[in-house]
Length: 124
Image (tube, rainbow, N blue to C red; front, side, top):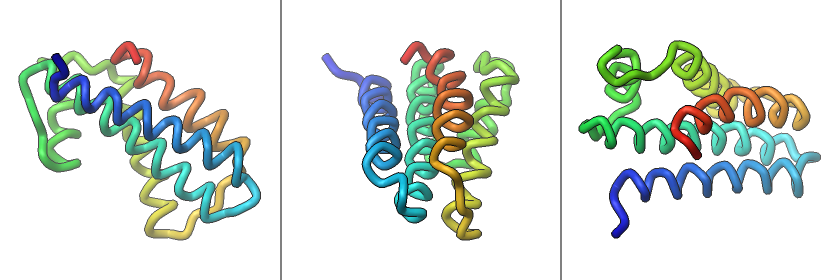
């Protein structure tokens, strides 16, 4: 039987796959790379949502999710919280500040470092 947490875990993987596809197939397009940044953040959102659901919470906003992640009772390590907040910041830069990112930097820093820390924590 599939649970809400399982659905969020699947969505996290799908968003990661989408970011990978954008970087692989459209690295020459700054708008595609911007969407890869955003998809990476939303992979983190769904991964952390799955964790918080497993802890008995189902936050309905970014603000509430961040509050719950910061609460020691939910056992989110500081490095995972920092990785999440870094991805959030770059997603905002991409969406609202027209940020331009090198595809290799997005791959190495956002996906392979920050998202990996989150995925490792939630065992994805």
